[in-house]
Length: 362
Image (spheres, rainbow, N blue to C red):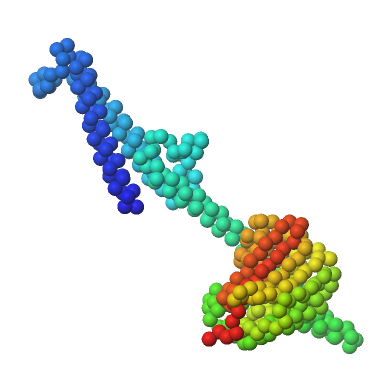
């Protein structure tokens, strides 16, 4: 910024100097032409109308050149900054030609104009991302409302039936209705817990994790058993291929269980029946790598790049909370770990979870 300031002063000084040289040269030259006796020093008594006109012409043309190279670009920069503040992000384009090069008479302010153009693009991109986030948030709110209304309608419906004194239900019917009410209540509780977990990480990060020593291989095996027994995973092929037989780690068991379960169910819910899902565990230097790979539909490059964003969902035809993988990443990061995704359309998706190989958190 200091170099730019010094360069501006240098350019202005040089511009004024060139203006004076231009003015004196042109004034002398024109006066020589109009004076048959050659150029003579003018005095108050010898000034003619022609001399005044020459002076005005020289001053006006010199001022015009000074304005084109110094004043007009500066005025354009001021207007551009003002328009940027009002959300007109493409206003710097006025300083460029059709081939993308800066207009030749703006060369004194080339660096400033390039920076303003880059700023405009950055602001426009940030504005577009904010609009996408707001839209995703609205969709998410609608999705949460939908996810809450559906089980609540079941609860209200079954409850009103059970409270109907004009109808006598068999013990089996009562058990069925109460069981459905209980299941919907559990679903709502899980949804609320997931929402609470999201804001928990935003508020306190990993400061209140409940660490305990767990044996990772059997821990993952139990999670896989839960997923395999889920009715949604009935038509899927799920394999577990650990390359190590035993590994003690210090983790928040409940949060890590939820994260791994979400990752596995994500592979189930976003792929067609018959998809093969493989879970591998291996030691990599001072890290444990958990790989969850499927041979399903795969993701677009855009979806893979945003899949861990809050509110983002790949489900376009149905409402979705859009918090599952966002929560997963927060859990992994809270354990000083990392998670990556790679995917190709028609080839499947691979998640890699990297956890620090620690047996204590002291």
